[in-house]
Structures are given as structure tokens and as C-alpha cells.
Length: 395
Image (cartoon, rainbow, N blue to C red; front, side):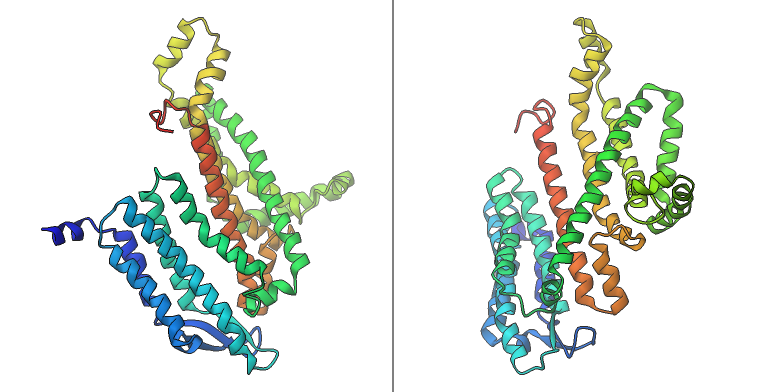
């Protein structure tokens, strides 16, 4: 019976993650290339590391597999989360240790890239952390420790130069100044766009709740614009903005032209509107009419009810819409590089043009990290801003 209980109470997400992790051991973990754009030779784990390095990673995955069958509880989840972070830490530490040895006998132009095995292991680790975060939702310390420990260790390895022999780091070291410039531009583009979109979207959402005649056209336009492919929308904005800048030269002095940040801002604001408008509308509509009547019965004016009752109750849903718009904007900003707006997409499209995979990763990985960070920050803000009554006073 105990065995049957363990099988029925197993952590399926962790089980799938550990299966993916063990499967990753059979793929190439490093790719040795004669230069930055050549295809290269895939090196499996046993060729990439000594036997002890491979055994350490295998042992950690087997621990995860065993604990996946021990049920869903905080103790097991804590062990799984710690082991997941140890897997990513051990993998990168061992890769950094052996990358220099592998390149010692190779020509100066040789490059060493992370192979499919590492990325598959990373996917398995992500599933483990996702599963443990859900189980440890009430244990704030362990939840955040398991979420951030691996990233902190990666940052330490990055700052100490432990991974400098990898091709992606060589791409970064040759473009440090440009990377910082495009990173700041990327953050500037999506953050300013979401702020403008929030201002417009919240006002439109309030208008839609107050006017039945305005509700349908507002949502019709917001839904239609959301279906336009991002690249098509960027392209559609080039012609009218170019015409305006030629007709009114002072607009050029303000930076408004067919290419550059102006069309990027407009497109990103348009894409941010739907989730913000929709969540503002739903957040205000879901307020219990009895609560509003109670406020009016206490002598509050309609404006006071709106400020003191409706807005505080709608804030969590409004912020949820802003969170979705922000995460979406982080990714869409990459496309803005195609119209000269800059951002991390510059590395992605330059890498595609040069067939340099590590240059593509140099743009893609920071975008993923930015999206995850924005999501976590916004979730924290939502939790803080949610009134205690809505969460049952559990906070």
C-alpha cells in the first residue's frame, strides 16, 4: 500500500524533468568548431569531461529521479530544488573547467559552444524549479532561494571569467560596449512603451466600463491590432511616419521618422493595450455592486467610491494585465532591431546574417532572463498590492 501511495502521489512534473535530464546525458554537451561560423563536431559528455564529471551530473539526476517518487511535500520539494540548482552549478563549473583543456591543443580560431545536452539539461532543471516553486508557495525563503540560487551562481562564474573559453563569452568580450548599449536600449524601449500603454490602456478600460457605446469599438480595435504580426505592424508604420517627417521637418528633430525608436514605441504601445484594457475592464466589472451600494449608502460620492473602493479592488487584475503586457513587450522589442530601433535583437539578426549561433544566443539569452525577471518582479508587486481581504488575510 505504501508503494502504491508513493506512485499515486509522485511529482509528475519533477519526474518528467528528471527523465529529460537523464536523457540529456546521451547528447553532445559541447561543440568544437574550427571557427565561429563552422558547424563543428559534437562532443558527448564522456568526451567533454573526465569520468568523474559525468558521474557527478548523472548522480545528481538520479537523486532527482528517486525523490520524484517520494510524494509532494515541502521537504521533498526543498531537496529537489536544491539538487536542481546543484545540477546547473555543477554542469557549468565542470564545463568551464574542461573548456580550457579542450582548446589547448586547438588552433587560436577554434571555438567551443554549448551543445544540445546542456540545453536539454537546462530545460529539465527549469521544470524542477517550476514544480518546487509551486509546492513551496507558502515558504517564501525557500521559494526565492531555489529560484535565484542558480542564477546567482551563473553570475559569479560570469564575473570571475570561469566561462570565458566558451564561444558565447568570446562574442561578448569582443562587443562589451555594444552589448551594454543595446541592453540599455532594449530596457528603455519596452519599459517606456509599457508605461505609455498602461496610461492609455487603463483610461480606455475605465471608459469601456462607464460607456456601453464605447465598450465595443474599444475592444474591437484592441483585438484587431493584437492579431497583426509584429513584423507587419513595424513595416506598416514606416511609410506614414516617413511621410510625416518629410512634411513636417520639426518632427525629425524630435526623432519621429520611418525607422528608429518612433515606430517601435508606437507598435509596442499598440500591442500592450489589449491585456491592460481587458484586465482593467474585468477588474472594475467584478467589483460586487453591493459593496458599491454600501459605499454610496455611507455618504460617499461616486468619485470617492471609485477611488476608495473600486480602484483598490481592481488593482490586482490591472497589474496582472500590465505584467502580461510587460513580458510580451520584452520579446517583441527584439523585432524592433529590424527597423533600426536597436535593442538585443541587433545581436540576434546579426547572428542570423553571419550564421553565428553564439551571437544569436548573446541576444536571445538576456531577453529570456529579462522576461523572467520582469515576470517575477511584477508577480511580487501584485502580491504586495493585493488587498488582504481578497487573499483571505493570508499574507
